Image 1 (spheres, helix red, strand yellow):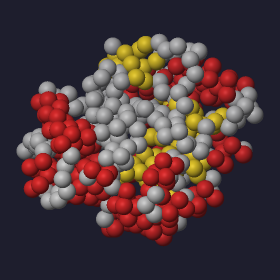
Image 2 (image 1 turned 30 degrees about the vertical axis):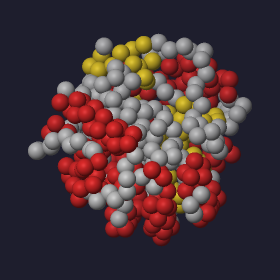
Image 3 (image 1 turned 60 degrees about the vertical axis):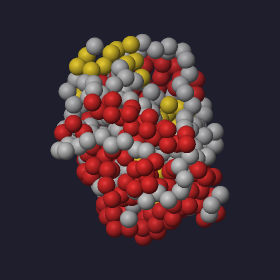
Length: 404
């Protein structure tokens, strides 16, 4: 087991003054002004989720550990296809060199669902596994997504050198097969100090620069107040630092003009906040965004509720209202991840699209979201017309990279 030093300052719920867990139940929902009947199983799930959170909090289990294990993986097994909904328009394989907790520790994590004390296993031989996959798939237009299940430049991957080895594997592949159809898609919350971290004398950003025309890096930045971001993303870089990474990469010739704007928390999507956020992105050279509303199982909805209640108790009802109504309980993306009420999402998405368009930013969107929200308003089916014309699809994959 190897210890590592965090590259960002830890903001923990244990440092919040006067913070106390709350119990979500039908009585509290009634007091919050939620005026529709709560299905019995939903009420039970809220109470169970509250107890689950309280146990995590009281036993100080909400933050990931600062250590990892080096283990082996099967180098011949093909990488997992990244197509959760079955309707993804792009061929994507997942580069996932870690199992267990991610050191960034996002409290809303869609992979761990808040369970941040799973042991972290880093696959020390992942380069071998990746090389085999690249060899097999070099004739297909395919994005290799590093990484949908962890932060690509998390401390365990940097300290172990596995992040560097993964990029070196791509470099060697393109040297051997200069006409390879493969491209790399990286989504990250990292700051410059992460990409400048050196292993055996070389930084990740130096390595990426060697294959700049083959790589796309998207920032991952949800729309939320800084005080909420600090507690929900305790070990991620700040917004300015994440945008600085994208600007630096662009100067090196890397495609980095798109941002994953997720998660979106409905109470914080007022016009002024969205306008300020979009203008910041535009000033940093961002041309495309992929917005997605917070989806989670009920336990993780309870978890986020704890912090909204602490900072903004008047917004807790607004946060919960669009999720729990009986008619919305079939709005499930995957793995029991509940999305907010479709009509509410459409109204907020219209506002985001309007403000983005005013600032020269297009919107790409997941086909699942288009299908779900398009059933309410056909306008959603055309929302990505501008982004598609520029080559962006779904998460913001820049398909024009395949023509180079």
